Length: 623
Image: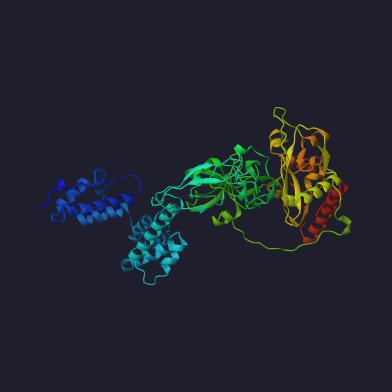
């Protein structure tokens, strides 16, 4: 040899575990480079073969014993035999299919994606079209629609130019992210001097100290209305609770909840937020699942943050939810969303997070936005995500016919129904709380006064003057027609109330009863919970403070953590013995069964008539 072997590292023996095709290709690459570097190609066939068999390892050498006679002295024949043994014959059609379906993955940078495409193309036999086909696959497979549009604008785009554009775009995106997050070293970071709590001057003024080193990046923050560096940790609202909605990471002055409620006054030294704005908007999302028997649930297991997470499939949910324990704290951002649960109670989430979610059955990855909820709630996948992941398919969505309800015989009854009397039980070890009255906007005072008087006249509320151990606060909710609904905010009381743990009906419970059903009616009980009276002691627990004095609820109010279970039990008792009638909370469904439509219609009318007569006996308002 013209060059001594000792100056070049010898290739590692062929690894005999794992992906053998990949192992062979790696060894063949190292062997070819070694031959060229040591000028082994100028040696005789015998020396080249002996060197190969020495380097490749004893296990691979044993494999060569199975090759045909006459090949043991020809280097190219031996390499070809090894290729066929470890790689096998290439299925060109399949290799091209894999290439043409390769897309950039969620956490894959552009260089890794291009390298993977070139590796796949090497086994596709594209010949002279290889560069142009790789270019096309890059354009069609990149994640960014903006980058894809930019690449398509150049009708003379070469592979190298395509790669350069992708790298520049990816680098600029990283730089913009650094700038937005305030990590650009060219920008000096402002420091927060202090938050003034002085009674003189503006009550909640933020004071910032600007460095003399140069300009700083300033932006009005939507979470605190302040002007500070765009990093969440720099926001004075980060980690604080809103005094209107109770949500985290924003001040009351920017709260978007459509609920008129102001928390009780704080001492001046503890005030963290501005409370000048009383009217805010509410963004609610429906979540229909509940903690029922696990055997009735449809679930899907996903991989998130290297953790297996079991989700309940909920096609009635507007959003996806995930437990806080599966999300890193720095992945959670503030949200103004509030979740309306299946029983119409409203819950404040911990925040929201966009997470890479891997379907373990297909290994597909998706960017999914989740609402982060406490760990005791169910993780859900909502309808839009289920369709995106193709976990469910809607085969038919048709409106068949609508039949108006019966006439004057069963017209609405303008009176509260009677589902019996409920007794609220409390944990005596929980210390009672008396909360002060919340302030309300002046513009709403007359509306509130009128609504309180109306509820008193109907016997739902009763004004009281005697002392009570428990006093909750009042909350106002604006309806879609502009009117208001008066509610109790029983957060402290809920901690003391003892649940009945009554089994709540779910859709899964009634689906099995709907076989051969052809006609359906939906009956909604208006003001459902108010059809249940409270005994005197229980009524005293529901006292609430208003600007016009204290009132107690004579009827079961919305918002108590036991209200749904109490209502379900009383309603089931009232409907005992009826056939073809089912309920989920306050929604009643009447079905008609039969082999023909006429039989089903007749059965439906009988069932509906019996239900409406029963409701009439109980004086329920329906629609």
